[in-house]
Amino acid sequence: MGSKRNRWTSLAATIALGSVLVAGCSDGASKQADHAANAGGEAIVRIWGPHDFMKGDESPGQQTVKLFNERHKGKIRVEMKYMPWAEYNTAIQAAVTSNDLPDIFNMPQNIDFQQVLASKWIRPLDGLVSDKWKSQFYSGAFAEGVNVIDGKTYTWPIFGPQLNQLLYYNKDVLKNAGLDPEKPPRTWDELRSMAKTVTEKGKGDVFGVVFALAENGYASNTVTGLAAGIDNLTSSGFNYKIGAYAYDSKAISDSLKFILDLKKDGSILPSAYSLKHPEAGALFGQGKAAFLFDGRWRMWLIKRDTPDAKFGMAPLPTPTGEPIVMHHTLANNGGFLVSANTKYPEAVGTFIEEGLASELFYERFMKSGVALAPIEKLNADKSKYPYPEYETFAKLHRDVLRLRPDPAVRNPEVAKALAEIGGMGQPKIKPSFNEILQAVITGAEKDPDGALKQYNEKMAKGFKEGVDKVKQGGAKVETGDFGFPNWDADKDYTTQDYEALKK
Image 1 (cartoon, rainbow, N blue to C red):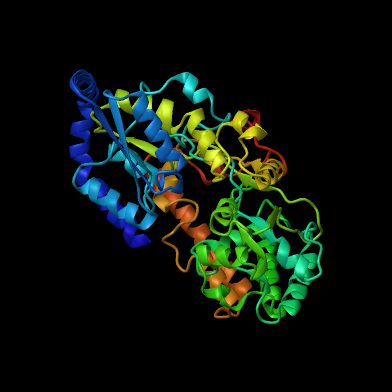
Image 2: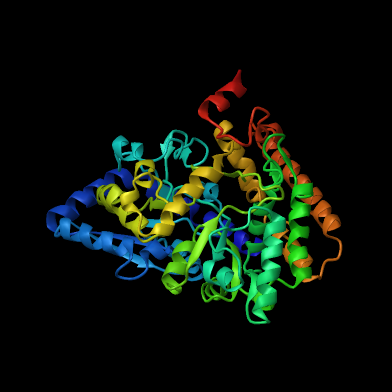
């Protein structure tokens, strides 16, 4: 991951000067080109992205493009291209090298938003879209230091609130094992007991739990998700109340040991240690396991790939059965961006406002079952739900998720420190958290607590060094900017809470 990031950095440096020159004259020239295109022919707007809602003629994205093109025939034609992530990242890299980025493109992986911004690849949305368009999104969807820089807006949230971990349960598997298919486990003990029962009744063919342990990030999402049921201040690996890393917390340690207990019981499907998301999801849908820990994306994939599966969704169980609370932020900078070199900025703005990020698109998006929309009133409208499970899905997000504080909202200068260390996950530090967890679960690492303690020390050191380095370069940022002593982790962190810290 580090080498990829360095390659992106050198690419950014290589094209920075040329992009600055192009960007400097882009406003006037682009408007002239826009008017010329609309006078004598169609403005061709290219959009590339890696999201499944753009894949196939019947996808929400392609259907939106089709209707938009019919409405604007002769004036604007949008060409939407889908690519899976690996192919997409390579294609964007090539487009940067040839200075031929599409008009609208999704933020690639393994590159920091601040690098993209500093290299002048992108232009703000200001002047392209209306204030009315921005007002349709959740309050807090746009934040200075995140997707608003120096008062200019660069992107919008693609998805609404997202749960990274839910408990999926196969009702037929539970019923066949003599368990109540309408009563998922609420405690760790209940889950362990039910998983053992299913495994015993399954006689080597059906197991209690299936994982996607070979998937990058799966182990970390599962462990931190379970840890939220013990202590949601330390569960993510960073305690935003005190502003310090917490990968060696008791909550994370206990959650990891709970997975080891499931393994000791023999309740985990044996092939799970080499499975990735698609295989694990398919086996769950086919009735080879009773339980699957996975994110919000698994719901629609189960419906698509194993449509006959009868399944339910529930919050992750907790040690005591007390309701779990997990955290998210609304503003992000990982969405779609507009190329600084677009010849047709007015046409791009029209497509964003009437197509790609319109209510009509998000209605189709929700009906596909992909996720919740970033528009609150749509999520509250049950007539937009595609199937009965979606109502449970929406309720889980309302019940479980709370807004956590975002250091970049408190102090936009934080972004410079995050760019220096590569984000709070610090990808240059090896082995990664996920790699440590994989090693523990497979048995390669025999000292879980020792490995977590050592990792936490490395993360704390890298964090401090990164902040100190950007401070020496003139950034006005402190490690204390990452701590929020007035945060109640069971409640949303509000604008008023940010303001209270300034007093």
